[in-house]
Length: 141
Image (cartoon, rainbow, N blue to C red; front, side, top):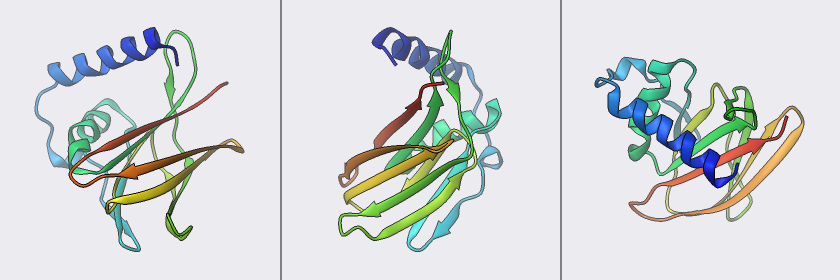
């Protein structure tokens, strides 16, 4: 995604958030737990998408899944996600039910692998105490 597209996309989402009324927690998909990781995934539909965006600050990690398209990127669902810790142990292995996955991870180093239509993308990241990390996985059509 080029800088202009990113800016346009960010401005569009920011505008939607500013204009949206406070959403109830019922718009959020259910919190799930796998091992010691609490997470939620979804974002299909504007209410759920906005609720997830508002919940982001409560989760150290936000993953977003998009496909390049014109005039703007399109959200993806059904993305296989595997998160491993710095020892290579799998701590989360799930299918994202929408374009967002929020996870509560302890501070540390992680590797995230996202797979869509047989194409894998890998990101290495560091979760710092009291900080949030946001990763956008983008596939070409």
